[in-house]
Every structure is written in structure tokens, then in C-alpha cells.
Image 1: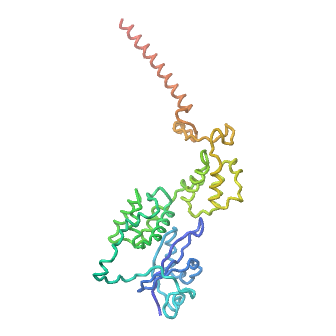
Image 2: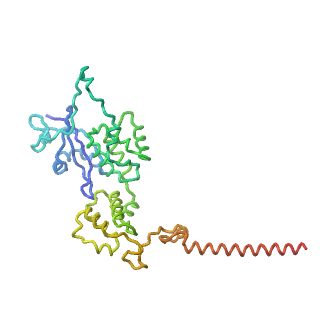
Image 3: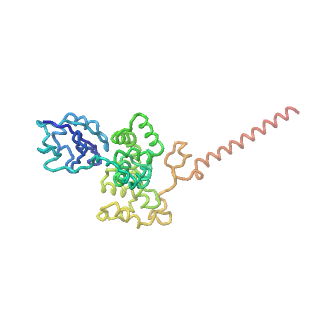
Length: 356
């Protein structure tokens, strides 16, 4: 005896640096119901025979980037592992537990004239999408993986089926992300599956350069509100690594603060990010009048001088209009102009005397 089944695999974060492939659902061929494995029973160590199958090994190799999906068909044979996913009567089960149905195609009832008159019109998908608590994604404004997770969560909250995800996705894209959507749509005669959209989105936008990562980790406090700095720092960190633990977020934010401020924070009391934000909101913003620093060590809030940078002197923080190099060069040019004018007058004078 054998039975073909469709397994749905997904790559997810195990920790900040590790990505694992899990099996999410199973659907028997010829049946409409899709069954979900419990969250604690989706890893490879719970499905040794399945993950030892040649098809699954190929899936694992292809899902190297997190937040990607793949559906494949695998034949379950009695001699291998059919009994692991079905009972003697052909019901889907796993380790003696009957799995929960997460999706099933329900036949549409035939409408009679009376039911047609009382039926409510279907709400347009764009009207439903307006209820989503989400900012548009343009390919640059936030982390792609984190944004896509929020998008799917909002769709689930509004009971939007995954067959409508791609249609709703278009309404929440802007800029080059919208161009990407048009490009994917043009490459297929029929609307691609959501797995195709999801995987293409992650491949295209969920890639951070080393400069982005370095900027997030090296971003330090220069002046102003400590709370605003902490919120900005956390946002940058989560953009490049949304799997950072709470402790790592707190440590990276606090170590980027001035030592005088760190000494005012009690580490044992900062168990959550909210506790850190609350503590920082109570500390007066850094100003030139009251900063806790000697005047010669106060943090300079000026931007790097563009004139100094043009001369090869980077990270000199002062206003361009007060730049000493610029003032010095200006005086030099004025002196040159005066000398040149004097020389020109002498030439004209000598030429006039020659004519006389």
C-alpha cells in the first residue's frame, strides 16, 4: 500500500545565526483538507524518515534563506513510513495524534432565487486591505523579512485566504517594490502561487550589506534625547537582524550610550526593552548647558564638514560656514585677487607711458 502526500516545508530562524527547515503541513493527494503539524513537532528530529527522503534533502538544500517555502509531493510507502502519517483507516495522524485541519475547500451551495436576494455582496479585497495596520514597503524603508511576517499576520487577522495574499500584497507596495511585483507578474501567464511570491520577495529584498550591518552596530549616541536614540538604535539592529534576543538588544543599546549614562542604569532592573526605554525617558536629554560632561568633552551634534571632507579631512564635526580651512582658503583667494589686480594696473600704467 502507498499514498502520495503533499508536504509544505518552510525555512525559519532557530537563532540569530541559524536557519532550519521545518515541515509545516501535510495534504493527502486527492483530498481537500490540509493538516498542520503541532509547532513542537515540525523539526527534522521528529521526522527522521521524511527528512532522510531524497526529495526532502533537495528541499533543504534549496531553502538556505529563511522565510522561504516549498511544497513537494512524496510517495508514502508502507515499507517506509506510511504508518507515521496515517492510521489503519486512512486518517491523517502523527505520533498517535490526529492533526488539526487548517484549510479545506468547502463546496459553494447552489443559490435559489430567495437566497440570491438575501445574500450579502462580497466585500472588495481592496476595502478589506485598508483595515490592515501596516506601512507600505518600498524596498528600502524596513527589513523585508520582518515586514512580510507582519503582512501575513495582518492577512490572517482579517481572514484573508492565502490565495488572495498576492493581490493584497500589490496594494501595500511602493517604489521599486511595486516594479518588482509588476516584473514577477509579467513573467507568468497565470497568477503565481503565494510560495512563489514569498520566495521571490525574500530573495530580492531580504539582503543587507555589510555597511548596513556595521552602521547598525556602530551607531552611537551623539546628543539629544536618550529615548529617541534607543528607539532608533533598536530599529536599526532589528532591520539587520530581527532575531536578536532581548538581552542582546538591551546590551547593544546601553553600550552605545555615554559611560556617565550607563552608570545611572541598573543592569539587574533592565530585563525587558520596555524597562530600558522607561528608564531612558526619565533621564534629561543631553544639552550643552546640562550634559554631565566637561565643556571640552561634550558630544558635538554638528554634521561632518563637507568642505573638510573635500580636502580629505573626514569626521571633522563643525558647521561649514565656520570651517577654518574654508575661511583660510577664502582669505588666500582674496589676497591673490588683490595682487593680481595690482599687477594688472602696473601693466596698464606702463603700456600708457609707452604710448606717450
